[in-house]
Length: 142
Image 1 (cartoon, rainbow, N blue to C red):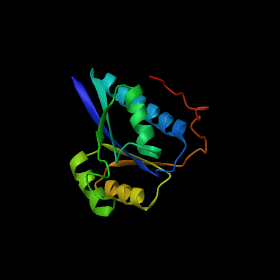
Image 2: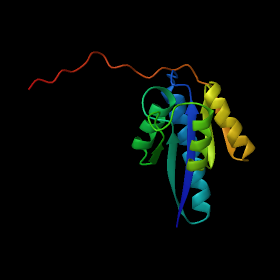
Image 3: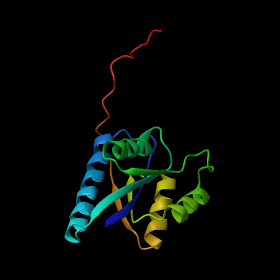
């Protein structure tokens, strides 16, 4: 038996704290694993976010790749950003838990939707650590 856990990750696209996001997702994954093990089951995590790119969505996507989790992505091309998009994502994605990082107004709206629906919400502040930057670009020649 496999227990699927849907984790909606939201927050600022300006957040540079990749390690804080990875740490929070690692802790949540460990909790899910423990719960599933007690039931004699395996667990699989599905990361839900508003699109790859900078900030929270991109880092959550990276965590999913590194941890063999699935990704359910709702990029801005799909529907313009705003409260209507948040409601639609929330309805379609049906998260089990919401992780919110350094919330802007759209993120706070998603947190509000989750709380009204009785879904667990973890609001986390950024630690201020920045993702390591690459030194220079490699150029490939043909």
